[in-house]
Image (cartoon, rainbow, N blue to C red; front, top):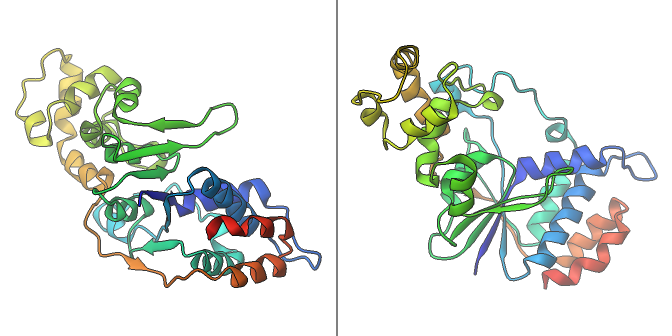
Length: 277
């Protein structure tokens, strides 16, 4: 059976942000629960023959042990402290959704470790770090519609078209490009075409054994000075594939799901429950 793997934190943030004002008649918030469930049901209708998997984030303890400033620019997402989280995870468990996590690790490493190379996998997220996992028709990234930006499915061809590097070259590209969103530094003022040249060398060792053809003296010195950080970045931006994952208990119990929908006054969702049978 093919896998549909959802980055849970991304999907929860998206659901909560769009529906944060929703509440029950007695004032209990329902935006996270309703938005996530409604979005999940829409995906199930579209990808009905797929097994659904939700990968949950944990604080990036292991990456911060490598680089203390990793994601230091982030604030705790409001959805993650919501009392709705427990109800959401219970609902997913009773839909027989495989919820996976690993202490000290982020969702992207959990996703990388949950991929099944023997079948097709679609990853749902707007996080471009996942592009390094794309492989033929076996592993693709679905980036959903955002405002005026249409939905896009990334395969190897579209990764190359957008970034000028293959998925396998993408981690090395990120090593030297950096990632402002994760507070990972890159080589200062190094243009895209030069970063692509570095990525195509295949490894950090090959980069620093190179004579840097076509680089200006300032670019050469900037890359040389970046060597120590490059090895740190490699550990931060390369998605792990070998974590020992924890799986939540699960079973298909639509009566339990219907009860949660009723408790949180999500009456419109109950008619869609048969799609899970």
